[in-house]
Image 1 (cartoon, rainbow, N blue to C red):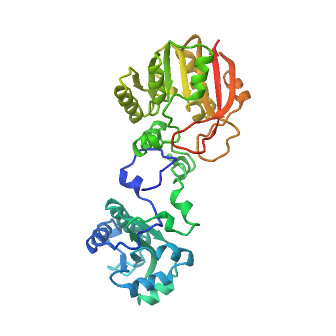
Image 2: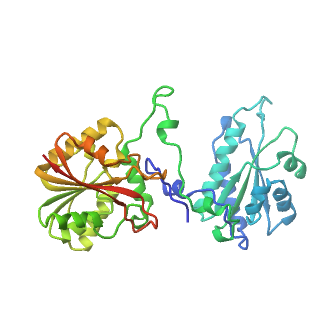
Image 3: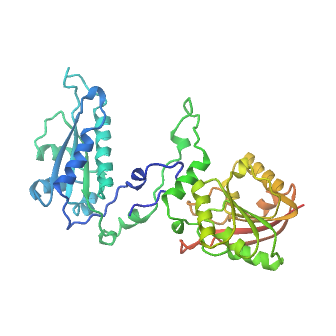
Length: 401
């Protein structure tokens, strides 16, 4: 199973989301020649400058031709040999650096060979095969082993096979197989009209991607029951009825739990998939919950509500303008003396994964000074059904003044 993409910013076709560079291969299971042919056919139909198709591939199969497979393995960097020795198929990609029609240098040859090779890897993923492109090898050794013309550029070696048991890998590689995948944010690599002018993806697109790709039970914020901090606050302040808004309802477990307690619950989220999941859970539990796709930074909800529940929304905003919009929205939607139960990452939580906002009591007191009274804060944890080591959290109870 592919590692989860963590900092997703937009939905993509499942094939792109599920392709990843695994090092764990089933060394006992050969790959049928027909499947290898499909991967090479996908590469063959890749685009190229002037239709030059400057790529070449040398296919070596441990089960069909171990001698040549050994030649490739021997040329790999020692660290790559540790895991690639289990891959049934090793494919060497080669770029021809000159145009065939005029002999002039083709400066796009390596680019086009890369395009073809990712097509090969995507086709492999579509058929349930794992692949891993390597740059750690001795190109001169490969050129000598396969008698390549001097002008050819050896670009990569692709390991291919069926996914294998991670536990059989050298211990140094195992974390690489289980850690979640991340990438640079779009705004650091995509420029809006001119250099160093960041292009920003709509925030809701990232949340929609996450809910499309990851089963809700595997989301780090998934919790089957009503969060204990919210339950304790309701009990301590004898809150048993009223109109409740669950902002950022996610998988809907909190909204449904509140509805089961007798609250009149409205649930909202920027992700259509999250709202659909909430609605389905409410239907399954035969519990009424009013569901809306809504963005707290551009909310169309009218309210008013006696209680607003925020289990993980506010800490997603670090820009002062967004924080002020959030504050204005919550203030508008709450009835006079209405309560906001807010749970966010604690400033003492230092792990890289998670929302950008990390807060202490003084931060909350400062942010909500205009229009709210801070009744209580407590240090706690973000309980999760999907995590053994939940992050540190700050639970806050605020009253609209």
